[in-house]
Each structure stands twice: as structure tokens, then as C-alpha cells.
Image (cartoon, rainbow, N blue to C red):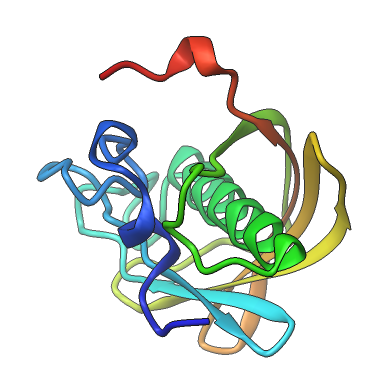
Length: 156
């Protein structure tokens, strides 16, 4: 496996997502990597990602969980097939189910560490459990069921 971010291996036509698309200049451009059997990303929300002064908007946290988890799903599927990410045919996943629990208020102005563990991998779906931490404290947990992207969603 390479040290390239999962999202940097997506084909151009699948790289426009607000949360993780490398071609979306207005998005977060989240970058996820393997760290042993876990996946990891770091993101620092901007001041305009505010809920109330000093704290991150919960919808942004859900987006971070979502994008990190679907990227982790793609990486897990490639790993299961013994292939490098970015090889053909592309393996890309979309959200089938997203559940987020907000455990503590998430402070603005600090890097957030996002960690994923793969619960299940099949030909059609991957289940990922994700945590979002600030200053070493888990602020949110999430569970995503990611499903293989249908061919009808891919445009050239």
C-alpha cells in the first residue's frame, strides 16, 4: 500500500465531494490514510464552521464522519482484494446509513483526529466505526454502512 491519501486515488469524476473531493476548492478536502488496521485523518474546522462561539457545527462533524468512513470503506475493499488504491476497476462507496452520536461539544480552532475501524467488508458493503477527537478527547462517534457506488452514479 502507498502513503497516498485514499481520496487522492479517486478518479477525477468522483473527486468533487464537499467533504473529501480534491477537486472541490471550497470543500474540506479531507485526507485519510491507513495507520495499521485503523484509518486516520486530521482536519481543522475553519471559524465559519461554527455552531455557537467556540464550538463546531454538528453537521460538519457528521460530514467528516461520513467522508472519512466512505474513504475507509474504499480502502478496505481494495485491501480485501489485495490491490493498490486507484487501480482499475475503481472501488468507490456511498453512504447507505450514517449514525452519529455527539458525546461532548467539539471545540473550534484545534485539529480534530478522525479514526476509523473496519467492522465488516463484503462485496457490496463495508461497515466503518469512526471517532472524532479534539485534544485527545472523543467528542463524537459514528457508524457508517457504505455501499458500492452504483454505475448509474458515475458520469464521464
